[in-house]
Image 1 (tube, rainbow, N blue to C red):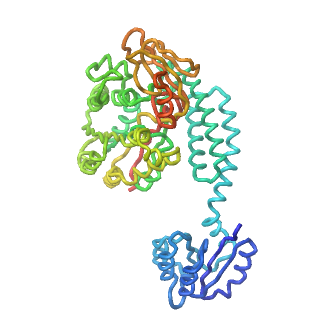
Image 2 (image 1 turned 30 degrees about the horizontal axis):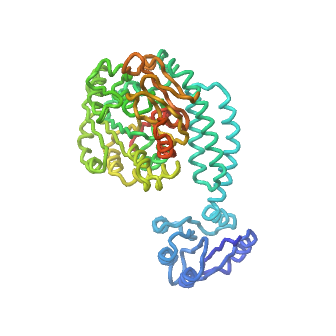
Image 3 (image 1 turned 135 degrees about the vertical axis):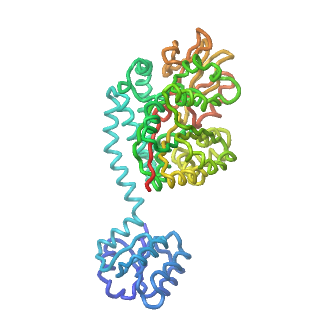
Length: 518
């Protein structure tokens, strides 16, 4: 293995001999220069892992040298060393994207720490992250053997997402595989938990059961309106908790997190059920009974969420809310471009709600388009693609505008998704719906024992097509496929992101309240 190479530029380099000997004893190769011009020539001719640069040199100054060095090797970290503590020099150096800023006199350990931070960081992060997860692995495994309640499952999922994101930044693929296995084991246990408890939630009081889709506005949104401040609710369809954690770093530039909690999506974890339930404050069978003109059968053609604004207005009326409402949906690029035009409408309203379908569109596009599948090949890439969209969307410009106008923001979703791998054969009649994670119909036949069947959907407040209608839900990374053309569909949908069934990724989803930093 080659020694890491350091270039140290200082007009008094002879006085730093002890520092150089110290670094060489630690396994680094150190070259020196006593002026900026020599340093630039060395950078042109050689590769260095890190460059130390004195700010105050005769002739070409450190900042002038830095500018030229960055044009030659823009990605090599440069550490500025100076006697000056003047703020303008610091600002110039930081603005030129230095890796570190040290004040003379520097001791050898300061230099060593800066080197480790800048060129050994990836290796050290990998080592420390791997070691920390190995400790947690056993603890999480022990927890999975217990009978956990809904709060403890939220805690488990938070931990797994934390380690998934941390390990994705390391270089230890073996630990990624171990985590994936632990997530799979957790989802199997979570499936048993849902199977044993889901129906009982509908006869329990809040606190004994989790916050569910129909509870969101009544228990979390409406109370925020009581102080008279403007509120913007952003519903990003199909946003998983790990995706939220990835884009939350962008929000941190403009907002402070007032609260971050996870709630449970109802079953099926599909848009027509979960999001209609959220906006109406009702379970699906209640919507179908009270507002039959606003509920479509599962397999009806067209948009089955086209009455969301009306359902929300009816919910506000039921709860005596008289605030001025602004409601909008963005489902494509053209729609997205007009979002900044809505800023005034949002500011003029007491409650504003906007639905964004872009993440869901990515999920569907990944199934249908090889290019998107390549871009979002795994969980890490899927998160990265979500972040890239968010950073370059007009939604971000809108959020900046809302922060400037002191508008509080709630970010949430209707359900998440899971990457599926294992096909399960299901036989149904002609009226059986097409979703891969749940089915409803008559005489559903399947062999897998790992399916949650609701023979009496009324207990879960789900609509009935007829008296013999039942619902079945896939768990973990299973997906449901018909025997006809089984091999084709099994291969086509394998390794795609789906929703509608039972998994932590689909059911345990974010609800975040943010206040502007200003």
